[in-house]
Amino acid sequence: MSILVTGGAGYIGSHAVQRLLRDGRTVVSVDNLFRGHARAMELLKGAHPGRLTFVRGDVTDGAFVRGLLDEHRVDTVMHFAALAYVGESVDNPLEYYHHNVTGLAGVLRACEQARSPVTRFVFSSSCSTYGQPAPERIPVREDCPQAPVSPYGRTKLIGEMMLRDFAERPAARDWSCAMLRYFNVCGSDRSGLLGEDHTPETHLVPVVLQAALGLRPHVGIFGTDYPTPDGTCVRDYVHVEDLVDAHVRVLDAMRPGTLLAYNVGIGRGYSVREIIDAARRVTGRDIRVVEQARRAGDPPVVFNDPARISRELGWTPGVTSLDEMIASAWRWMLAHPKGYAS
Ligand code: UDP
Image 1: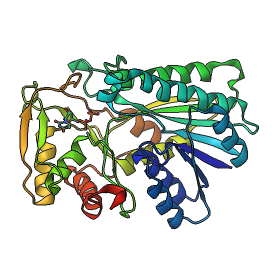
Image 2: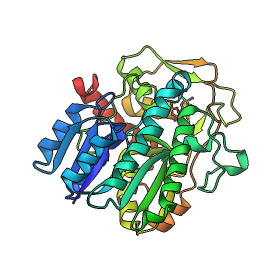
Image 3: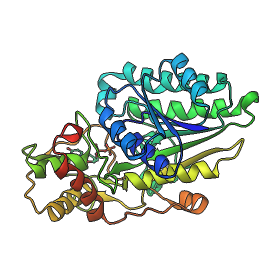
Image 4: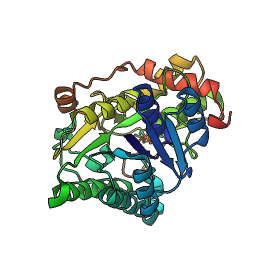
């Protein structure tokens, strides 16, 4: 039996594929390569000969997904394929509903119709489903009310609702599902093969490192008047390999009939200025900052309460030092200033 990873050529998906291959599993990765990287797939195939099949295609094509499930006798799906920029989702909501909601529905229908049963489904959700948690809700637990403030966050919440309904249908039988709500993911794999390469890049850590590398003139700080110790937003940064580890652990915990939801974040927050200071320490380079207005929809402080995931899955982050996290992203960026095209 194999595992289907949708969005397997993307940043998080490719790290998940790598981890599954390292664990000795057989993986089918599907990606439309809109933002994913064929190069990441070639590198992983080279490192793990014979155990990775990569197929270019779109998950919104349910018949295509169904064909993959049957051909490769898939029993487990990790669904990463999605559009994931908050700002872009505001400008172009229908694209987000199409890929993130219709895409998920297509994959689930394919699972329902597959010849051999798909029994485990892991869904990439997001802390953006919580929207702007009230201050007394920080750190954020899984039972925090979910009230997303962006179309992107809403597509992820609708995905969770769809999965709940799907899990409760009478025919669900052996089906089990886990929804992982990611906090701010960063870093790259320890072997140096894979990294974060987004176009456009909007995430804080790579943006700061691109400024350190001279690929951009400065970093804009989006808001310096938040009610936080240094006036900038506080977020929970989790290393991509730790995030992927949560996926592997949850697979082991899934039993027929279970519907699980976990936050994945280290449980401590760092401000934008702390990230920039850490990047200065790690890179030894000057990083120019320009203080700018707030970005719409940014909550002042969001970080995770990892109690549930640590208690139930035994998950604890391997990387908790901010400098180590930034250094991991920096190593790949130094070696790949133009991303996978380097
Ligand atoms: N941020 C910033 N400048 C940038 C990119 C991000 O000040 O060029 C801030 C952003 O306002 C937020 C934090 O950094 O408070 C993390 O943003 P990112 O886009 O990386 O992730 P998000 O928290 O939006 O998922």
